[in-house]
Image 1 (cartoon, rainbow, N blue to C red):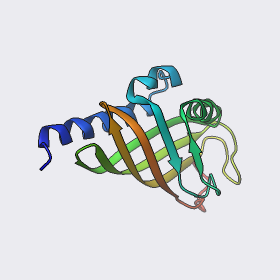
Image 2 (cartoon, rainbow, N blue to C red):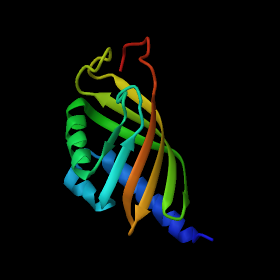
Image 3 (spheres, one colour):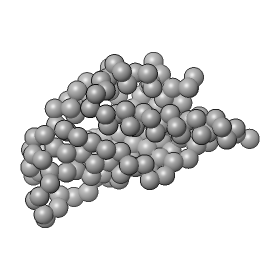
Image 4 (cartoon, one colour):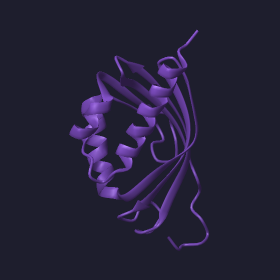
Length: 144
């Protein structure tokens, strides 16, 4: 039987991590406080990354820096979260504002994705993240 306090702490860690990822003051180095040295981030195929991706910490940092050139503001709204020991599942609505045009989207427009994200923790840190990102199509309304 799992300890509910442990489950709650693990959900809290993931929520704090997501808030930090959305914080423009954060950097790959400061986000490291949430990440295990062996962290792997898997992004399943989606509209933005059609082949999916598997990134270690160095590749996560590189993707973070590239993303900062494209997205000016982002938000992770956690719809629900649950834990089973060192495994945490969250349902998220991600919203990002584009700095530059992306595909048919204009700079300043919003992108939105509905995300199922699954985390594994080890030693109180995130060792694995697996995302299933479902991006909303471009709206017929071109306003941001």
